[in-house]
Length: 124
Picture 1 (cartoon, helix red, strand yellow):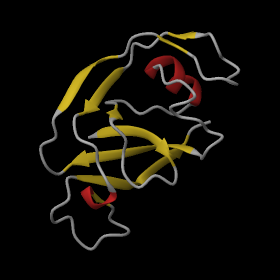
Picture 2 (cartoon, helix red, strand yellow; picture 1 turned 90 degrees about the vertical axis):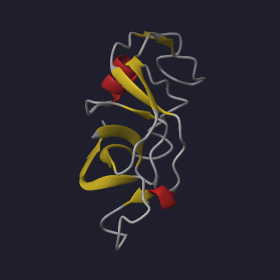
Picture 3 (spheres, one colour; picture 1 turned 90 degrees about the horizontal axis):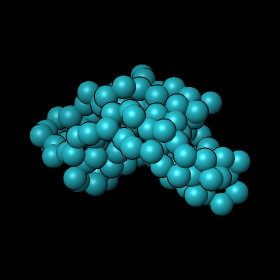
């Protein structure tokens, strides 16, 4: 199982995942060192979703270092986010056809990952 912070309207996870769920934008910034240009709540609602692998997925596995907020217009511009959280980086990009979404798909045949629909939380 892994967790992904993504835009609510997103239909496949991005490349960066975590072992632990993140429930606030503050933790997204400080623990995972995610700058606003990468995840901006003004573009769409940010949510945490839980996934599980249905096939083997190659990833890099490690801990996140500090990151300087360089997003123009960010109220935290110039701040260094501490990091320290765990992260997986997928070596494969996923598209909607790779993802089994139980509420939308009849079968997981040929799918690589499953989105566990009932675990959606909005980050605030």
